Length: 313
Image 1 (tube, helix red, strand yellow):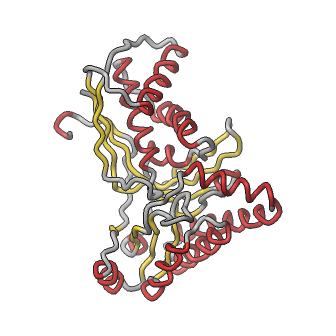
Image 2: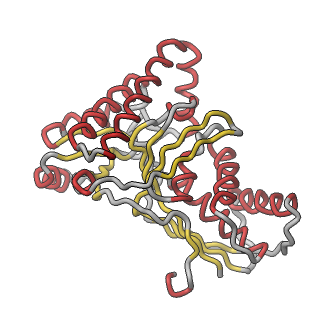
């Protein structure tokens, strides 16, 4: 058995803008997906078969000796699905890492795992930025910008989200999205094609917000951080990726702090999880529990993808 684990992610700032060459500030979170491979009678799964084929083609191209053998698999995940927390990317990263070792008997560098996981994500999401798989692969806090397909700037930041900010951060379930990430990316693309000047100005404002939020973490400025959350949400609403249901929830939460959606968003029903900075933790928790709204405290992950020894399974 071969077992790998990868974390989910939260986009602190830069959703959708990152698809158009703007930066995104992203953190891995301490919610993980575990992927296990066994040499066994093959279980048919279209997505896993695609990952397996992608890995085998890569090994053949690199002239790495490998053995093609049947497999069965198991997935265990703490990452909510369809909520903007990177469950798909975590699966892509962990599965790529596992298949690489399963076929070749070798462990590979994270950069190679990440490149292959990005190819897999393109199959699933058509035009992903690459940020989800990157933060899941490397962990920690990342400032990410994709200039071109062949040029991605990945800055692994050498600082953490300060404790006085992290201890007031929550992830609140704003409801599962009806749309896929691909559909939401296409929706923004259509709007961009129709109103290019307007959307470019909006994306430029999101970029400024992302940079200011990064500065707020360096300076440990909780006030600036919370202001940037509020600004980012305004821009995402103008971009048209936040549902009425989620907007109403955010209005109800206003007395406890400020929040924004994190991820591709959704407009038909929910918009995924909300990243929320609380000024009143007790009041917030009481409200969420009373109204039976799922939530959990934000906690960073610094490990990224990792091989699990047998005693860790």
